[in-house]
Length: 229
Image 1 (tube, helix red, strand yellow):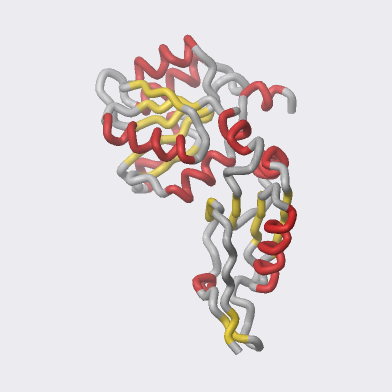
Image 2 (cartoon, rainbow, N blue to C red; image 1 turned 90 degrees about the vertical axis):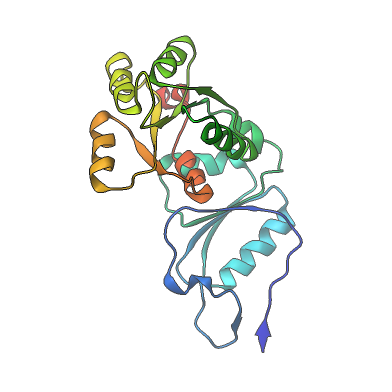
């Protein structure tokens, strides 16, 4: 007997960490090993019926599920660093956009196409953002307004991302400076190490992977919220 799963709903799915090798198998037969055994999944949906149906199906596939109808609760899990391999999110639920918009995001990127594409990705995830075209403009923006996250292109004219990250660490204390995410086409160990030494907190390779972007943002939080911890 073959079992197929059909569910009429729209969700955003973010893979937070690598899944087991057999996880691609979502069609299975009774008696076979559960195809997603051990995968830790979060379900965030304010519709109780839809949430419970999805939870039941994921558990049938062997997933370890955690569910909530409140987006802010899921953000608290992420900020604490609770274990999660896969997040299934209903971005249309009340409060989801408010939770996303709580993060103040600055993009430091000199390539207008790259900046535009990142802004579109963030917009679709519910985030607003501003753009600076070099490191100098990024520093000026931070002096003018508070930002929680800076997506920092490593290679920019006037002042590159490495020097800008160093300057941010000089001017802002640990509890006051934004989380700096390096944007780089290079993924070599040496370049990653250079970013870390400069004070960058994380990095995203270009072209940007949407799932990785979502996981990166899940680890960020507002500075004023961090002060209360």
